[in-house]
Length: 184
Image 1 (cartoon, rainbow, N blue to C red):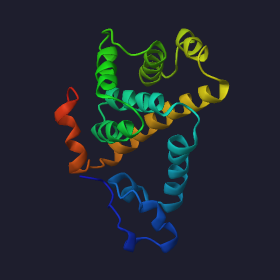
Image 2 (cartoon, helix red, strand yellow):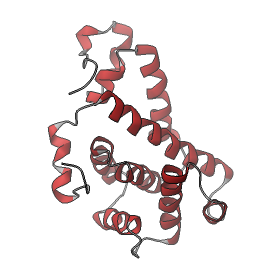
Image 3 (tube, helix red, strand yellow):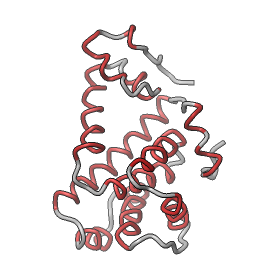
Image 4 (cartoon, rainbow, N blue to C red):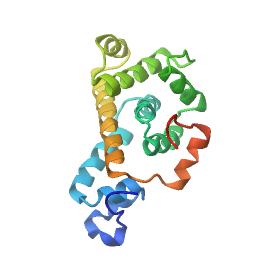
């Protein structure tokens, strides 16, 4: 159960109701601090709609963070979002395999991005070798967007866990296909 209330549109000032368009528990809780919620939504919106980073690769990086951090909410939401941006079941199986140290059929850049996300989650930063490998394929702008995307979602999973934000039932269905080890 969430530590703060989920607010509905009629419980917030009219000028902040646009932040509840997505109608998720995350947004309903964050709007308890409407100006912070707007800033949060600004970064999230940039990542999803304005970044020039390949959206499939972006979603794989986000999924890696959610999977590694055992964040049911983040992982399940981004399985659904990722599929809208070209992530396949084979990609997700590859992510799960790569996380366990198994080989997958993912292309080298996707493998390197997943490794970079794992390094940022586990070790705070990407290693020199991983950064250099990804940098051979991506521009400076793409590198900034990738690193900030991974860092942002490292923050998001911590918000979700600390606020104990409940996952919506229709997202829980994702766990039937992709159960996260250690998550009930």
